[in-house]
Amino acid sequence: MKDKLYTVTELTGILKLHSKTVVRFIHEGKIKARKIGRSWMVSETDLKNYVHGELSSPAAVPETVNYSTLEGRITVSAVFEIEEQNSEEASRISNSLMAMLNSRGGTGGKTRFDFFYYPEIQKAKYVVYGNPKTVMEVIRIFEILSEQKEN
Image 1 (cartoon, rainbow, N blue to C red):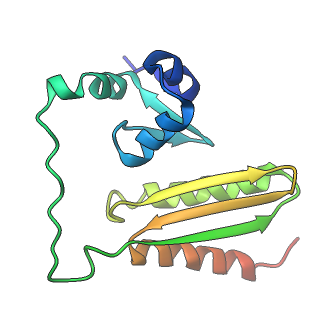
Image 2 (cartoon, rainbow, N blue to C red):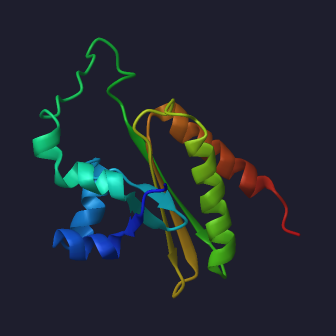
Image 3 (cartoon, rainbow, N blue to C red):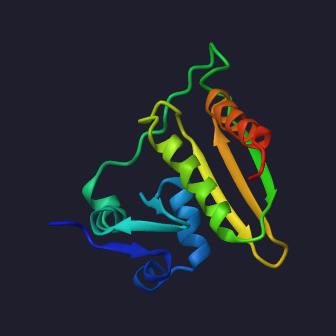
C-alpha cells in the first residue's frame, strides 16, 4: 500500500506551522520530503517520523567533519537565470536537472536544487547548492544548453 503524500499547504494545517517554516524544515532535513514538479511532497511515513522523532529515535548525532581535507568541508552554490516566455520550457529544464541530480544515487553529497518561475517578469531561476563536482556538472549542462541553437 502506498503512503499518502502531503503538500506543504496540508502540512501547515496538520503541524500548525507557517508554510515558510515547513519549507525551511524540509531544506534543513528535519522533515524528509521529495520534490515532485515544483511542489514539495511529504509521505505519511516521513510525517510520522518527524512528529514522533524525539520519541522514536535517539538524538541525531552531528556528522563528523574531516578537517584534514577541504573536500568534505566545502560547499558551493550557483544561480542561473533564464528569460522564458512561459513556464513549460522552464519546468522542462527543471525536471531534467532534478532527474540528473536524483540519478546520482547519493554520490553528490548534500545537494539542494530549487526552481522558481516568475511569470510577471518571464524569468526562470535555478539554484544549485552542493559539492563543487556536482555544481560544476550542472554548470556544464547549462553551458551545453546555452550553446544549442534555437529551432
